[in-house]
Length: 362
Image (cartoon, rainbow, N blue to C red; front, side, top):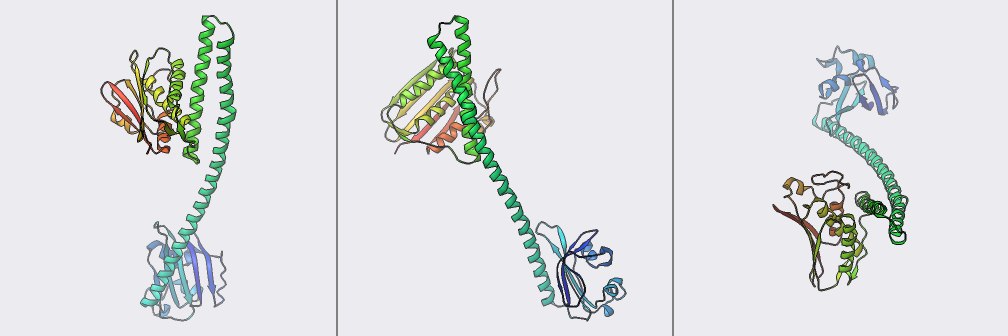
């Protein structure tokens, strides 16, 4: 065939994408034909190929205006259909002389080339999409670093200054009852904001790349660490009773700061949702095989649907008036347990709920 082309064919336009011209047809890539003068329009409308061996002897096209307009006697046009079913255009060829095109070998060859073209068109689009996605991911990574930097410095440091100043006021300046109450409110708010910032930072690291960072070691003072968390939360919830049952027979290999963060999150959750006047029980045990930490509080049974999403980000139980938090605490706690190779589970009965952390030690 003296002329062959890959054409983009729409309802309104015929555009040459690639051309092989040995008969001086005069078409270049990017050139156009009037769509109404082409047989490719019929191929687009029917979705079926058109093959003509000899126009003058073809019953359907002997009197068709297109062959006379473009001066060909033999013709083939095969639809190019992408994998998603969208019609792209045609692979077509013409020649001024008759040619035996209606044979299995020729038709199969043109179909194969049309399929290959459709495959490469899809690949090009997928590559462009992948490059666009990669660029977006890089931009997201830069925003992540800026976000974490803002939280880590521009917010956490001022909050720390507020909390430390409140502690200094309580220790060094004589205050009346109202003044002490106001300073305690400032200090409690500082603790809450610091916890929220820490949870958001961990969420950003975990979801946007970087993951939770652990610094594990053998901890012989883990009981002291747990008691410090209880003391801090007791300041925020002075009217709640927290009972402990510690039996740490062996040192615990873990990241004590992360364990303290996990414990603060699940104990804070228990204090928030526990029944007023009912104590919260904290149990901690360790041996050569396992470290176990449990927090048990009296409350109504948690519905199964809520438990299913309890450790997902931004998930909370029934929200109480004036309750603070973003619903990240239990998600972060679960991520910390997972980073230690452990588990964090919840069992909720009619009168109490128990969160249990287990970290293997062997």
